[in-house]
Length: 198
Image (cartoon, rainbow, N blue to C red; front, side, top):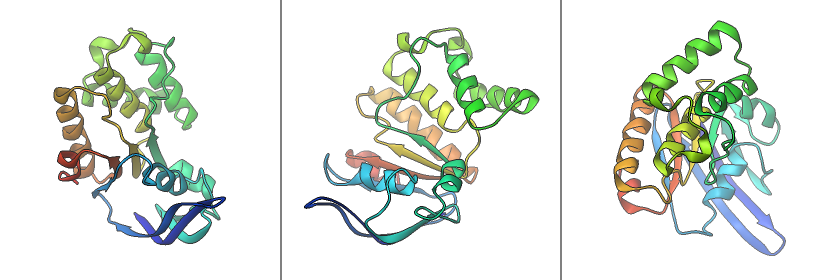
């Protein structure tokens, strides 16, 4: 699902990522462990087709990240360190917006969103504005938005930073449930206990 060969990114004189070689199988939960500034986010941004590699090659869901970045973007879900939610929209409105951005319409969108709401137990929060949610609920909503189009590959960039331990545990249960259904997940973390679950 994800393959890199000598992937490298340089910003001026700074080597941010150097010779990364990965092979991540379909349905695998793969972790990148490292402290802040170690190149985890830069690696993910290259794999998402958001940054062009300086050298090396990478494919995601069968698409070359440098030559076919738009196809990569259609094949992935991405949850960044910063939630990327619209605080003034409700939970339901955020989900509907992201599903629409990914091209879902009508009955297909309604069916998919119903499944996400049930899976992530968001039903009681549908009419609550995203900006009023706690960190754990925002995290669940952000995950729901990232998987709105049921992508084969999901990138999670330090998704549990600043979230309470109970919410972190629930979130990892959801990650493993997605993996069991065949979604490939690459997650960055600086927590050793989370890395051990990858």
